[in-house]
Length: 290
Ligand SMILES: NC(=O)c1ccc[n+]([C@@H]2O[C@H](COP(=O)([O-])OP(=O)(O)OC[C@H]3O[C@@H](n4cnc5c(N)ncnc54)[C@H](OP(=O)(O)O)[C@@H]3O)[C@@H](O)[C@H]2O)c1
Image 1: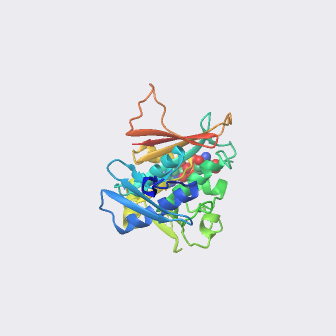
Image 2: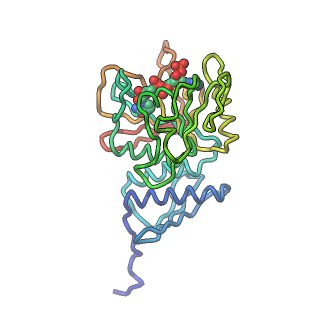
Image 3: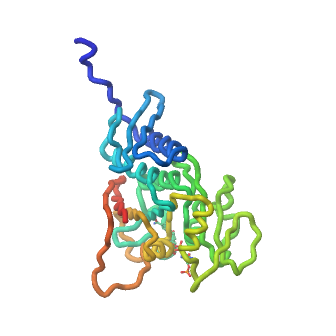
């Protein structure tokens, strides 16, 4: 057969290689933010992978590789975040049981969701510039909030600790990357290097003040990682640009609710721009963009 009739070789990429494309895209975007489309080139051990991402269509429009539909949907989901226009952009994620709980009554939540969802959480952390969590999540879980399951860098961690109750030995602060910070009430005196202060209004920080702080710090993608109390505040005040709820096939019967909101008299309508579903192991991620 004439070699010119040969079809170009299209390689089937792994999830790890797909992740390398996302990391490359993040690097590229930080250098040039004004294009309508981006050509992402990524050298793996075997190949040079190339794809073109359209910001207008919010997806890859051309590529020299193939992958499972599930992997391609995931790459597009991450690239939409990486190449987004909004500044800051708030994305919330919560993993809940079929009956709507994020932890047991005593606060245990390790591990409600699948290995695949945990890996996704680490990827979200890695794409983000800041992870925000509430103080109770740190008290109950003592999470590290690192990206140890995937390749990439840890982002800044911001813990809302209005009463300055958390000591610096918690994993989020003691990790030697020095990226653990907290926000306390401006009424409390504290000269630690890792502390920001904001005023409290009716017991809470105003999300507007928090937003201004994130602007000053020049942080764009903000990952609101829970718990339910904190995520509900962001949802209720219309701050979330995107909300991901991972629904896991377990029933807890009672426990910590995913949302703590005022009761509605009638069924409220949720207005959103798009909704997508991703299968993650035995879980389903419901991905809502507002
Ligand atoms: N399954 C998951 O995906 C997941 C993820 C994260 C955490 N968790 C679990 O969730 C549980 C913790 O959740 P949680 O809802 O109890 O607590 P949380 O959201 O982690 O933290 C709540 C604390 O933050 C305060 N707070 C909330 N909004 C604030 C604001 N705007 N300004 C200042 N302070 C604010 C609350 O104040 P008030 O007390 O005054 O209201 C409370 O002290 C843990 O058991 C953890 O394991 C599960």
